[in-house]
Image (cartoon, rainbow, N blue to C red; front, side, top):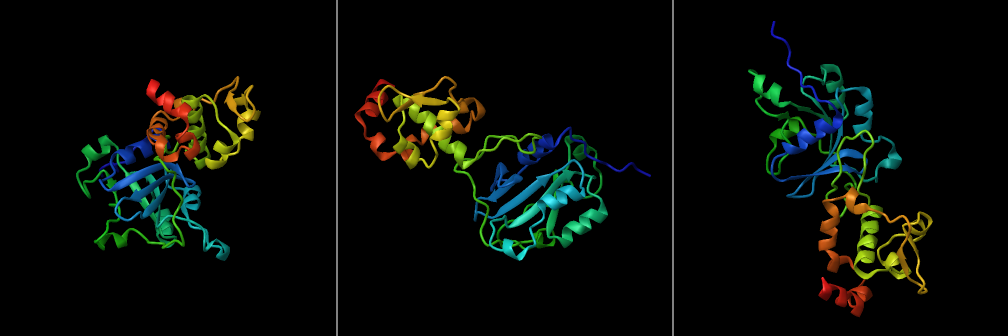
Length: 265
């Protein structure tokens, strides 16, 4: 009897990274978003798949992926589809059947070795195929939960590791904090009005020593322990910089000081 093929991944992070690399065109992966390891977004219409990853299918990951059943959760945000991502051959028929009853899709991901060794069955790097618009065959594997509203997504695709044991996230707070850092870099200071317009509280910046009061009343400058978000988010940080004119507070955008800085640059 031939030995059953099973894919082996070193960690959930490796499993997620391999899966994201194999996504078909038309899908965007948001790592560590809305409480999921990955939120997949279908570019055509914004449909979402919330994905939780584990190295084997177990009750814990099923509970993580399952939709809350309480009536008071009916208007909560959620993805259109829910899924668990596991290595090929690590699902198990019993829990896979339970997942179907809970409207959860089980995605099995193959390693390169397993893909090359496989002789029978579907010759695909992961199964099942993702749901596509204009087709109906996928309804055998995917369950549209029609949420009241979809998961909120960050302004930028997070440049973080999906499935990490101590995951970093790109929250709305962190995006606003990056904007504050960029504003300080470009103009040398920020004000309470800047914080208000960028929807972030100034107090934490002062308490942590990221900023300090300047000699000029009403202005904050770099403190003794500057916040280095550029190192944490090397991809997103320059993207936010490039959009400076879109989010910069209007009064600062038109200030002579900023215009002078841009000329010098």
